[in-house]
Image (tube, rainbow, N blue to C red):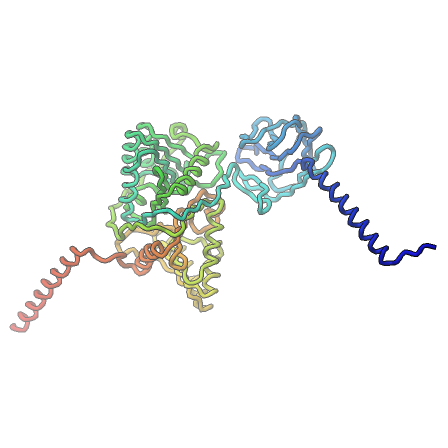
Length: 542
């Protein structure tokens, strides 16, 4: 009888396992060369159109199949043409097919209606269930899409723009009142293009500058929100009429295909520079007639290119229409009075930030802002019209920073339409800070005649990172609006806006008087002292 050592048996078994594993590996590798199954990548269950017309499901089809069926608990549709490949939109309502978004739209046989309250969808290819997606509580006008971070709701046609970054930008920093001058200089210097985007537009001086630029051969286009809160003013209609009559292109955003609740971003591309503001293009804002705001003009090709891509993406979508077409059915509200111009309270300053980032909402602006607040180590200084509530995403991050020992100051508007809300909020947060011994203080601005109201939207982190732009501190702005922020890093940037913040916090001037004014002040002081001395002597002689 042949005896085989036990260790040989072990070696043999290991050899067989390794050999089998190797052959299995080859087999699996061979299988992976075949195309993956079709998959669901987007669902659009609640269009803004009447009766939810325009529902669709979007697929990625990697290779043609003999049959492709989409079904839920109540019905099913078969794709009429299965020779398609790539991005495919299954139109569930043949009477109102969706815009293609670059995908191929295919017809169907059968009946299927997507429930706004949610349901389970199955995709069947060649008789096999190849994908299953479940959603709940559809949002009107938004798609449920598969992203790198999982499934989430996004406005239909929403962009997915990356953060644009530059380490070679030059920036001019300024504040309103007074920021009209650097903005006007940029527009006057344009030789190639001006792409101006905003929430509202009604400043006659800016209108004139844009018309002059157009007449000297500059490409001039505007992109504005078509449904601002409170309605569009007759003053804005007059300025847009002037621009269109002069040949300037004006795009208005809104309507049933609107991707964002509001187009709230405020910026302009001027040749290879970018103007980014917290203020609207109206007398109260860029006209320096009312608001305290922050702004910057950044000279940098990368930043300008990023803004240009944003402008083109927003102006070319289905929710954009010409001013002439918009005006046919629009109504306009009476204009409010224009206030007096305020004196400039801070001078512009040219700097070279260490790093400049262009942040777009809702893609990356809110996420980046929350991250910056969460990483603060020494100080946070916030200026906002209001902050919505103590449980808002940004307020929560600021409070958490205070619990880590970070010094937090939040300055809010005292204007009549937010005064009561902001007083209550300040009292609530200050009480919380006192109870927990946090270095957190919230107060309402006291303009003291230097400006009428706070409209700036900015934050200074650790004295060397400044983020400014259109983003208000509330959930709606973070998730539903088109917003824009610029983040600039560097001590000189931090010092500039910190000086403005501190002065507004304390109700003081932000810069010393010019030398000439100091001389006049000294002379007046000497005269006053001489008169006082004479009065004193005369009193004694009586």
